Image (cartoon, rainbow, N blue to C red; front, side, top):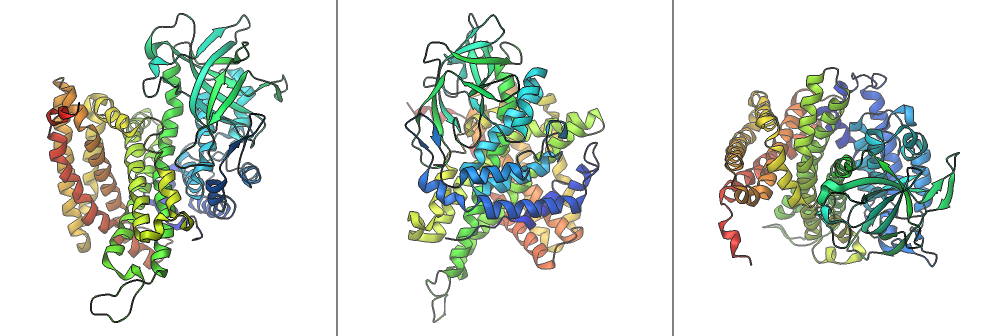
Length: 591
């Protein structure tokens, strides 16, 4: 099986050009960092995830996590030792504030480190991803006492966190949840109910797990307005913070899944003994959905990274196989050649590579604005960048995860029949990728969020500013004749996005909701393609004009990949215009 290597040079380039690390390092709290220091961090992280985490990917898929006779989850061989090495090296804490034991790195750098973990071993990476979401929830909504007791342990990865939303009868519509939280005289609550699809709901990596659970208090209003959030530890902490008595919940079973076998997906039952699981409210009563969205939006960007990560992992295997597999002759040739010599195989490999670079650009651009939203000196910049993050979060989540499924499928196609054989290992990435368009709100829900909530933000100014900003690269492209065709296609694609955005905004204003909803998914696809096309153009120009510290062959490859995206893939964006405007009428044939 092909060895995996973290693509540190590609990541550094994207951090330089799109993440704009030089700009981030000037923000308050990050002045101790510079490009060289961050580069050293990326190098060391790349070594760690390549050597320690990546080799467990296949082991985890084959062994899976299991539920033992005592009702506890046992992870695959090597996972406990690797997790200990991960937290001892400080990677779990890298992106969090130093006051809580974190490494004090910018979110953008932390996201790059998380990309490495996901590419090395997606199933394993889901555990710290959810812990990071738990940290954000406590930072934003926790009490001083909750932060003091739980936050440092979660930041350092000594304890892990989970999200409990879904119930057997309640999937995307969380207003129908039945889990009850009964108030107690001491201010705590007792929880009763069943949650399903709980990722890393139990494991043997740490000595405590902190669950963030949506439930309803007595006499709560109907629907989502009656939901509150509760912190429910596996072991009730003693006054000194050490784990004490086991809380009243049990792991009923583990789901048998298509992929991510190492990630234990649990059915959890609270209060079976009749006492109820002890929990404490996080934030205010009936604000559970708002507070949970703090966790979900962090996780949505993390899930978007999974589309990139699995594309990268599958690409590395596919190109290595294509270089070795001898099959077929070139026209006029007399000997069989490696399949990488065939134009259609080259097309597939370039499609994977260009999409990976485009996804990374979109993700790092969003991360850059996340740092600005939190740390910029002036309020106007913070507010504008927060709007960019809100606008792009559903695009990162949905566009990248849809592509992850498509690109891992393409890797199997490169392998041909051998790709359909589990022993080659490439099928695992396809299986693992399939959950990502479903996680943290299905991609259809992301598209609805984009067209109904994000387009109207600030009277349409947020999306308008985003689209108009794409034209800034045009003059710089003009200076490079080899980018002429790319420039023309990007111009046309931006015009198409302006057209559909205005069309959707008009329909939304007129109350034509079915037309808007019918257009949502193809519009998100168009939005992702055009935004990524613009960012690929930015990278191409940077490779020509300003990138330093990279050899000429690497930079020429960057230009070639960007041109392939702009000339071969970007034109598909305008093919979606007619679909977006087609309206809902034909959809009514489904009964």
